[in-house]
Length: 242
Image (cartoon, rainbow, N blue to C red; front, side, top):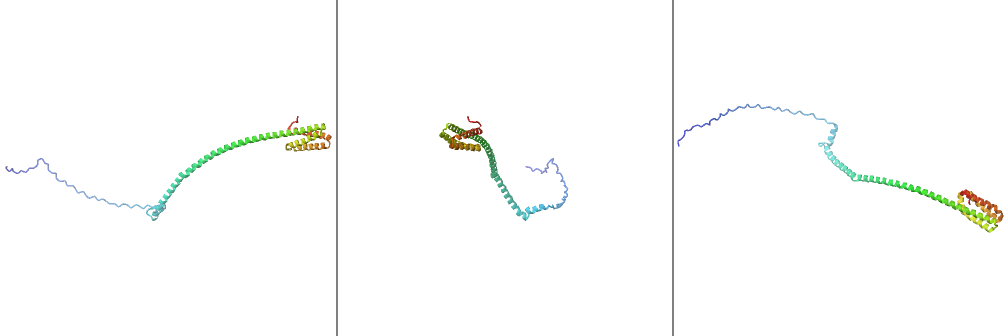
């Protein structure tokens, strides 16, 4: 091959390089260091200084007191928990039991009051019954006493008839019987009217004495005894015997 002549090849349409731009060197900026102003010390009161001395971590006393206070707080907390547990486990159930016991006592007192009222009512009923029984007993004793006095009057009436018939043996027997029957009624007569009982007793003894000496002289004494007996019956029992 034939050697071609060397030609300089330059690219077409290539823009020319821009000339370098000189950047002006910036001037160094000087930062002005300003020193901070010192703050004025804060002055605390004596209370703060005292507590800081006693409790501060940087003081010897504080380094001793702070652990002691922590232990003391722990002990107080445990003690408070113990009190709370005692209240919940012991005091509160005991208080509830006490309240329940008081309520039961109130119920018991109410029942006792009701029983006392019932006892009082029964006592009043018993007192009324005893009074009725006593009244009946008095009526029975009075009826028995009157019956005994009427027997004595009957004995004296028989003695008067025996005297009228001049039957001395029957007369003495009738007067002896009158003596026994009058003695039987004497307790009631003595309690009701003692002077009347003594009078009837004296008149009967007089008749018995006179009859032994002279039966004819005993008529008026027998009549007086009979009158005294009938008067006593009317006085004590309210009506003359029929």
